[in-house]
Structure formats: C-alpha cells, structure tokens
Amino acid sequence: MPKDDSLKDFILDQLMDLPQLAASSMFSSWGLYSDNIFFGIINNGHIYFKTNGVTSQKYKEQGMKAFQPSAKQKLKNYLEVPGDIIENSDELLTWAKEAISVWEQDHEKL
Picture 1 (cartoon, one colour):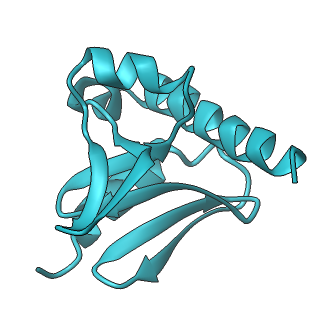
Picture 2 (cartoon, helix red, strand yellow):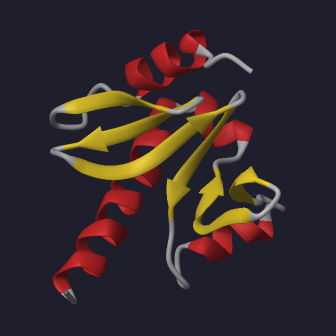
C-alpha cells in the first residue's frame, strides 16, 4: 500500500510547533522526528507514538494497539494515537512531546 502523504502533511501541520520537525520515508511508512529524535510512525492511515510502561496506559485505556508492520513483528512501544487526539492540535502536540520525552528518558539510561 502506498504511503499516505495527505495524513503526513496534516500531522506535520498539527505538530509544526515542534523544533526541527521532519518526516522521513521508511519502507511503506513515515518516521516522525523532532531534533533528530524518532518519536512517531505514520502507516496506513494511522499514527503511532513512542510510549513506555507509564505513558502507554492512556493509549491502552482507549483500546489503541501497537504498531505491527508485519505478522511476525510488533513494536510494542509504538502505540496508535486516538483519532480525537489527532484532530486536536494542542492535544496532539502534548502527546508528541510526551513521546519525545520517553525517547530521551530511554537514551539517558544508555
């Protein structure tokens, strides 16, 4: 399935307040970056943000699933963002900043 450029463009517009925001092509998806931090994935009309044990709870409470690029692969730390959050630029920005913070916390431990 081809990448959905319209969703990518919409998400980039919604998140334009993030520093150095970029979308990079990755296979049939788009990777979302801010200041070179990989925090999200756009795939097949869905957007997924990086989570951890704490932040994933609000996604799971709304029935959101992990990104699964193939039947044998699942990225459990990248969960789908609910549609009502995607439509609200302020909320989406808050969730994106949280995903960026999760990435930063993971890499502080290295």
